[in-house]
Structure formats: structure tokens, C-alpha cells
Image 1 (cartoon, helix red, strand yellow):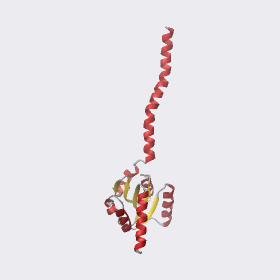
Image 2 (image 1 turned 180 degrees about the horizontal axis):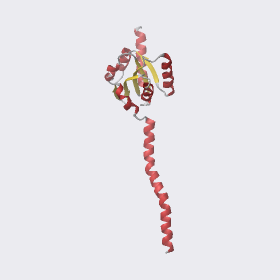
Image 3 (image 1 turned 90 degrees about the vertical axis):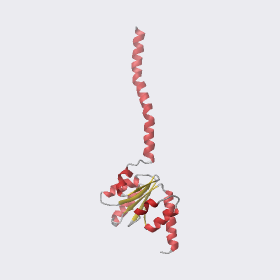
Image 4 (image 1 turned 135 degrees about the horizontal axis):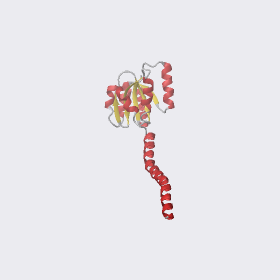
Length: 170
């Protein structure tokens, strides 16, 4: 591969990393072509970009970015595919779904400005809530006290009315 081609690929990888807030490094070498196509289709449905890269080019792309990505160096061995997503837990759920078949394997992840190295972090990554889930939880918490007050007023309205009616009759 020519040096110009390598620098173009490095720039492409670096710009893609900048465009997404989370990325996962996986090993998909044991997938046959049918399973790889299925995985790519599933990634497209969930707005996950899948890219197979050479480890040296990925390392150079990470070095060209602001920030220290050296924690991921240990994971840059063997076959590497990157799953880019703006939803923190979507790739983890997809990896877990396919892991039941024994593949793909999580190597590392950069999620919400934190590093997760090793396959043992998959469960923790699955449980990270996405932005939409967190917003839903906050809305639910904000609505809960208002619902309690309204419920109390509605149920108490009958009681207060009954008490006032009894007092007026006396």
C-alpha cells in the first residue's frame, strides 16, 4: 500500500472517530461472509457504523487525535473491527446478541469518555443508559411528584366535600 493511501485511510478513520461519541473494538474474524453481512445489516438498522481496519493504521489515527488513547493499545492485536455509534449501549447489545453464537468478541471500548478494555466489561457496557433513556427517566421522576399531588387532591376532594357537607347539616 502506498504512503498516500495509508495517510488517506488514517485521515478517514480519524474523522470517523471524531464524528461519533462512542466506539467499540471487536474481533469478527471467525464470522463467515453470511454472518458478516447479517451483522452489517443489523448495524445499519441500529445506526452503528462498522469498519474493519488495520491495527497500525488505527493506532496512527488515534495518535493524530486530541486526547490520550494509549489505553487501547493492548487491544490492537489480531483482527480488529470498529463499531461507531452515538448511542452508548447499542453496540454492546449487538455484540451480546451475536456473542451467543460465540462471536464477535469485545476487545475494548471508548464510551462516554471512558475506556473499557477486555471482554469482561460487556455486561457493564450493556447496562449503560443511552441519552434518550436518561431523559425518559428524568421526565418520569419529574412527573411522579405532580401525579402524587393530583392523585391526593382528587381522592381527598370527595373526603373534604363529605366533611363540609356533614358540618353544614349540623
